[in-house]
Image (cartoon, rainbow, N blue to C red; front, side):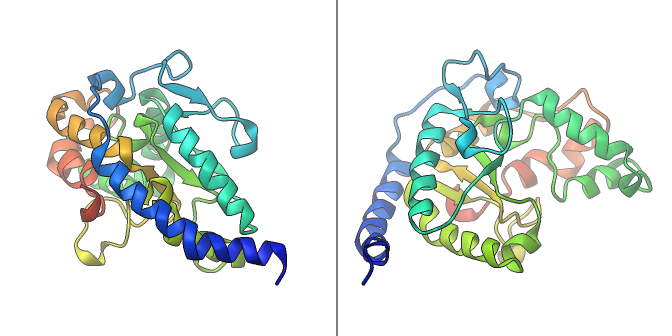
Length: 246
């Protein structure tokens, strides 16, 4: 047996199961933190926020992108574990503030693909895969998109299939969970996103804080914002994650 194969077998057989148990415990026993409404809505400057760090180029395909420092540390561990198994994980989207998310939303609002819809119907069509500004988990610095934003990469591409299989088997042991899983079990909101992974030891607390502090009155200042409450942007989308993660 080669040294690489031996090490990989040891990881799968002994180390990963131990890490997974530790991660589950970590997710449920994190020290209680407080978060401001500005943090929850993405109305912060990540570059100057003490809890955020810029992501080094080794781990991302973008420049000057940020995560919470703890999230980044956990991703680094997962990155090197995947590397040991011959897989490359790249962050292609990380923390996005309100203005950045608004830019994404406004471009889609005016896009020919969606402009054929009106009012709430247009917003709902966009919300299959994109969040209204102020409702995105990417505001929090705990959520990342990995490698590719297309479902086909993870289902039809040979490399992508290996990456997704590895993530579904091992990411939880590093604290990362796929929040937008299949909707066949009744999950509401966004469509399944195999690329979107959340660092739950912090994100779980952020969701609880969001539900306590944020109301529909705060979801404003972009085209279609008046559709937020009728469409359940908070109730069905912000909270439309895998039931096991709530």
